[in-house]
Length: 198
Image (cartoon, rainbow, N blue to C red; front, top):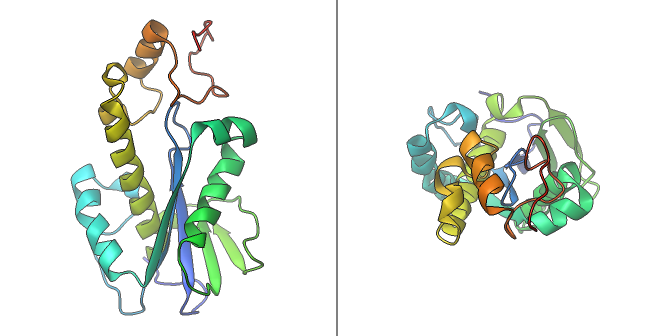
C-alpha cells in the first residue's frame, strides 16, 4: 500500500461509511499520517474483521498526525441526497483537523473542492493508500459505535448487528414496526415501498 500520492507532508486521506444504509448517519473520516507511519494490518475497512478494525482504531488515533470524524444525520441526507451528504461529511471531517492541509486524496470518484486545496479522487483508494485506508477504518468504527448506541433505543431493528444496512431482518422490522427518526425517508426502505407509518 502506498504512503502518499503527492509527496506533500500534509496530505489528508478521506473516506466515508454508511452510504448504502437505510438508517443512521453517513460518517466520514480524514487522516494525515506521518511519513514514519508503518502498519502491516491496515487495509480497506471492508477487508478487515470488526475485531481488527476496533484494534486499529486507537492506533490510528494515536499515531496519525491529525484526524477528524464527522456524522451527517438522516434529516440532512434526505434534504440534500446521499452523495452530497457523503461529500459534506468528508468536508466536516477535514474541518476538524486544525491544520493547513496541502493535498487531499479521496476514496471514490466524486468530490467537491474543499477550501481550494488540490485533491485527487481515487477509485478503490482505500485499498491503495494508507491514509485513505486509515480514514475508512475510522469512519466505519465511529459509525458502528453510533449504531450500537441507538440500537439500545430501538432494539427491534437489530442495528448492533446490521448497522442500518438493508438486510432481510432490517426490512422485516421496518415492515412490522414502521420507520424511526433514524431512518432515511428518501431511501427505498422496503422493496415494494409499502406505506410506512412515519
